[in-house]
Length: 599
Ligand code: FAD
Ligand code: NAD
Image (cartoon, rainbow, N blue to C red; front, side, top):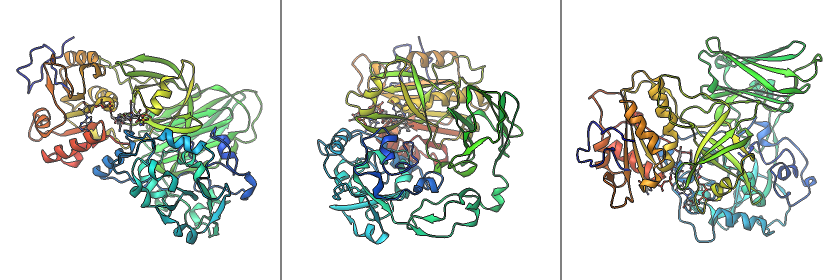
């Protein structure tokens, strides 16, 4: 198939094609009580019997989930954060601020770390004892050779981990002897440090009693304690915002239970509603701007797998209808779970996973496959354009979590229909790295196997595209994945879009993802153009070559008109994204006109 030549370049193109050549675990916390944590996560048991510390609510429980995740908003920060998501050297998760990765010594990969944690070596220096740590005690352990860090009320001796940390020792040292929760959350709140550092667990922060703030009393009445001032701050809205807090009600007939959530928001849609019903546990999450409202109950009686979710978009009402297994009268909806009826910042809500079935695995290129995962029947989840999910697997006894950006099953060529809204499947286009820890394990999954998939995350907002006239998509390798839904959305639902131009950087021709489909789309829709740029082409390559550079960008990224509303999205390896953003700024594009996809 052939793609049409670009309007602005490449007269020398010999071929007809226009070759513009070109990764919380169930992160509540480390377990509900000592000793249960490991079993719950499918890990080796804690080194000591549970009785060493008295059971008490976990920090995450008390706070209704995760600690504050004050994300750095600047683009530079976003890009920096992505540095840790790269696993070029080690594949080990970054536990500190997101700066670029540092080269790790040989033998310091994530797999090496996992091996060390399984070796039986005493990594805390406490011979398996778990202790209560005061703030003063924590502060004493602030040197590389003796470094303790508190994350969500739990204290870890990270000295043995120093050399394995992809972000480098200095990054880790920024939190030495202190509460590192904020630093950690700013970058990778999804990283399952509980699992990764379980052998480094020193103990919990000692508890000191404080009076609970008034606003908390309805949802936190049982929680009057704070962990040495290190309890993750719970985000509860002030009085005026309280009026906007969603609420819920429920009613029943002989055979049905209906839960009604009044979101108090107009323009509710399926992407803002996530419902899971696992056995008797019902979880309904509503996303309201930066916040999340949760209905979470252990249902009074069993229900059938089948359920219905109806959204009245204009009035903002969400109805979840469950079918009773037995036609009996329910006295209550059920037992409220820890985060039931809470309205918190979305970033403070723990990641929730459900098991999805692998239903197909199709080759896209020599090293990239399209995985189709089927959501459980009793899950309603739509991953919004520009957002990613986390996959979780137990590898060598340790939970490993990596981010992936869902795509469509194929590129629709007919943009008359609204974008593909399947809702039952999640499609992931994943490059299998020959020495990749996670992708190798993924590739070994058999059809019919299950894998845990999180709810969506990400800071891209569709509204960024909704006013764009010229959309430029700079993608490198699998950095193409967020662009798939994005171009589909722009071409289908954004009436003001005049051009969508994909500039796709790859190493070789064989690496180009969905090349044929892209070329077909360019032929079919005159608003769409594609440029392939290869960094390691063969001699036969007639098109553009090179890596991202100011000259390439000035050639391909041009406003149609002086006052065109432009959005440039960029995604790929971190150096690519970082350089791209800098070059674009040098070319005069403002920060608002650029969106960098990062972790
Ligand atoms: P690791 O064990 O971490 O690394 C092993 C080797 O693989 C490394 O030495 C290196 O040579 C190579 N390698 C690993 N990761 C990278 C990398 N990121 N860049 C370059 N080389 C690497 N990947 C997809 O295939 N599809 C997606 O849709 C996708 N979406 C993502 C979304 C986000 C928000 C982020 C941050 C990343 C995304 N990734 C995606 C990358 C993915 O999360 C993993 O990093 C990747 O699958 C490698 O994991 P691994 O454990 O197999 O490799
Ligand atoms: P790759 O190694 O095949 O490289 C593809 C192209 O990227 C190269 O041809 C080159 O043009 C460019 N490139 C690579 N390294 C570069 C460098 N150091 N400087 C400038 N340009 C460079 O790419 P891949 O293996 O497919 O990796 C894709 C990357 O995209 C991964 O790092 C992945 O984590 C990231 N990704 C991020 C998201 C997200 O949303 N944040 C989504 C998907 C993929």
